[in-house]
Image: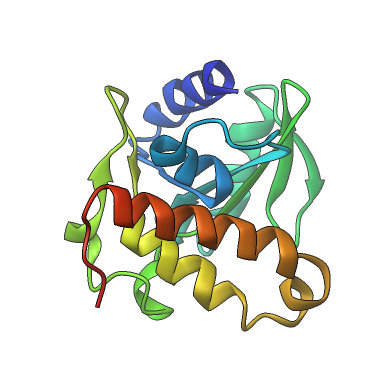
Length: 158
């Protein structure tokens, strides 16, 4: 999956996009491959989802992405589901205070969250009706793994 991520990052660089790697694959940066990943969640500057959506969509289609759900901004790329969302949700939902809280994702041109911010994101997601009905157990397992990671690494969370 990381190989596909690296391909996508190289494609997005053409538009000067430095994505935020989010979701379960994002937290795997800290936890390792703790599950079989079904998708990749990437956060991008809001303009690519809002005012520049048509151009962004056309750009992705021209680079072998296949649009599978326009409302959710989901594509297939190399048989993997890729979801794009607005980066601003991180601040709007209180996951981070500002973008300075993001950290570099390895050696590639991308960012991710700190583990404590992933914990905040997963806790916030439990307020979502769909996630409560369909993902509560899985999300709680990830929350438990993050809490254990924070304890082992002596990271204090407010």
